[in-house]
Structure formats: C-alpha cells, structure tokens
Image 1 (cartoon, rainbow, N blue to C red):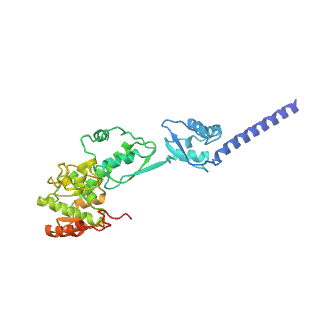
Image 2: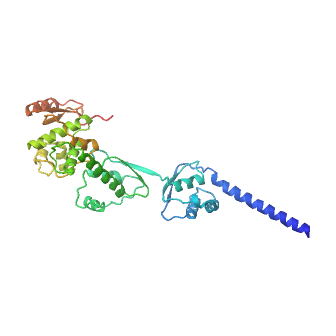
Length: 344
C-alpha cells in the first residue's frame, strides 16, 4: 500500500513538473522574434479586449498559439491595457514587444504637408491622396466642408496654416483641417497683437488677405516686408494694388499660365487692376513670415516693384523709375527669366 502511494505521489510530481515545463516553454515563445518580409500594419479597434487582440494576432500570423499570450495577459492584468490605433510590427518584434507598443499607444503615424502659397483646392487635393486617412469631406462643397468644421459662411481660402501635420490611422481629413484652422487663428491673433501702428487694416482677416498676396508675390524672405510696404503705402494713398496674383486667382481654371491685357481688364472681384483696396478673401495659404510682414511693413518710400527675372524684385519710388525697370527687366527678358526664386 505504501509503495502504491509513493508511486502515485511520484507520478503527480512528474506530471506537475511536466506541466510546468510545458507552460514555461509556451510562455517562452512570447519572447521569440517574429520573421516578417516587410512591416505589417495591425489595427486595434476601440473596445477591443486583450484576448480578442491575441486571437487576432494569431489569425494574422504574428504569433503562434494565442493561448500563451492570453495566459500571459491573465497573469499580468496591469500590463495588458492595450489602446486602440494602428500599429506597425516589424521583423524582430516579439509578441511581448507588440503588446508593449499597443499598451504604450505607439501608433503608426503618417504626415501631410501644406505648402505656403497653395490654394485651398491644392490642400484638398493633397489630403485626398493621403494613405490611411479617412476622407470624410469627399463629395462636400467648400461651403459644406466649412460648415462641418464649425465655421459656416466663412470662405476657406487662406484659413489653414501651411505646415506638416502628423496623423494616425484613426483620424480623418476633417481632424487635420481643424488643427490647421486653429493653428492659423492662433498665429494670426498672436501676430495681430504685436502689429505695427497705423496700419490700413480693419481686422486680422484683412491682414490675412494682405499676407496671402505677399506670399504669392515673393519667396525671397528679405523682400516680404518691402512688398508689404509697397502695398500698404498704395492703400494709404488710395492707389490700386495692381498685383498679378490676384488677377490669376480671379481667373480660376481659365488661367492658362500667361497674363494678357485682356486678363488685366477682366472684371472679377479679385482683379486689383479694376478694384480698389483689398480683394474679398485671401488668395493662398500665407506662412507666418508673410503674416508678420503684412503686419510689419517696410518703412521705405517705394510704390512700385518689378521682377528682375532671378526671383527677386526691383523697387521704385516713382512711376518713371518703375517704367525704366519694366523696360530693363520685363521687355528685355533674359533667356533664363523666372519670376520666382530658384529652388535650393
């Protein structure tokens, strides 16, 4: 009888040891690096449980038997609180490394860049081309889009700050647009508070309109305040701005790349050869430097400028000087003439 009890005890010990070894070996697999031919995106929906995610990892071939990951999750309840999002797993990641990414919320991100001088149409086009971004504005008119953003009856042009915006797979284009809109409002108000005295603007929005014209007229940093100074002085003297970018904007899709005398005579709300004062809205996305220049114009006395052909401009005080500069740099254009600076 004693021998039988001893044998039974030995069998129980061996079984327990075998089970322990089996469990230990199973949990050890969670530290085994996975081999992937390329990075894999893994999406965790809101409300997902740890066990559910473990099974999803198994279905996607990222872990072997999800039993061990689920068991690990039960043993470590303080380390299995995963967050929703899109995650990128790469070759060499272990199951536990994947879990750490999801617990820490190290989601995969992408970025989209809005460029100074872009029109709102360019901005929308850039968003539509983005990967892993929900285009919630698809099919909406500009007016409907602005209403969705909470700014009904506002013209969208110039309202969004040009910058690089990082987003996750859980966001939509409207989320990015809200950030860009709020950023522009913040920067515009900040610059407006520090503006120079006696400017001919009745509101920050008018300064934004001017900034957009400055942005389109020059890409040379040192010239922005000079350009703004010319336009401010023309406004103060009751002179028309007579700036080509506003004409081009007013022509819309009918502009073919060349400004003609007929274009300059065209009657549009944006043709500053035909209207006095500022156009009704911005004509592009101005950067902070252009906004600052519009609110801190140069104190010189020039009233005219003309492109040299190398991206910079010649500034003139009188019409006679300006006409001479036009003859020198416009009517006798060099073969490599360009109106914008050469890209670096």
